[in-house]
Picture 1 (tube, rainbow, N blue to C red):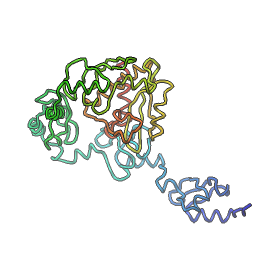
Picture 2: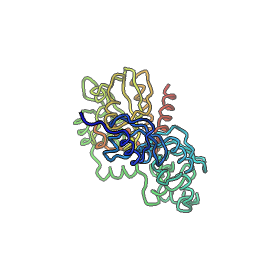
Picture 3: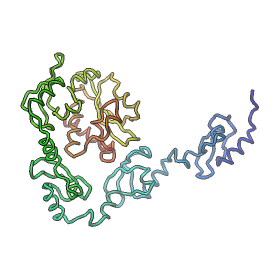
Picture 4: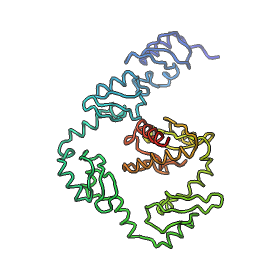
Length: 368
């Protein structure tokens, strides 16, 4: 047996490292209740960790954040938190004390000196807050007819395309830099490589789908039927471009993944702190879908029980449709999500988890 360490010597080592012991020496590898001599908080490093050169205080090193200190920092930066502290890298729903508008800054960003983005935009002056009539004239030149007052240079501005009459939300800065209607642009690109209906139909047949109506455009939904004899589902959301990118019959995919629309289901909301992304998804009781995401760093934020998987799926689809109408596109790529589901992800800075959850609840209420 090795020689037992002298408790007095161990205490001197801890004090030299910046930790004052508050209880007798518990053992080399056990947590030792101490007081940090720098921040005066209670900490529990072990003697072994100090001997290995690891820092003694998790607060001073930034590995752990004291809730009181976090609240003090946010208030000193002009924010009034509206929800519990979610972590240093997660969006934190707050209200600005100055302008009284809500935003979701991250603790790390505020600690680095970032303030309210709304106040910052207001202070940018003429480069952001243009005269409304001048801003509208620029949008008209770009082919847009705004439907709401000018919101700011880099904020989506609900408008209608003068040419195709479809609604979108381009930013003033994008229109000023020459970016036009994304729908018209997509159709123009399609015209340059427009397919004949025979070729497009052959591609759909090769993907196991039978078109039920004439070929519209590459981006428009093309009503078709699954050729799988055990399925034969009528599909109304697939477009030629989606089939070209690998999308297939969702009913067959769900059946192979264990998603049964007749079983009780869930609408779940996930958050990924590293990617700073939010994901909405659906699953049924007994499935392992949420677990598959959790193994890759996703955290379960909320989940909403539904009577059937069909109801859960409809809620999810309405949420995604609303996001697309607002101009919010999928955030992550297939490379970052080998388990699938990247098309249901959004940037957490654009749609914080709490706001996404409110949207899910609203759609569930309408569905009910």
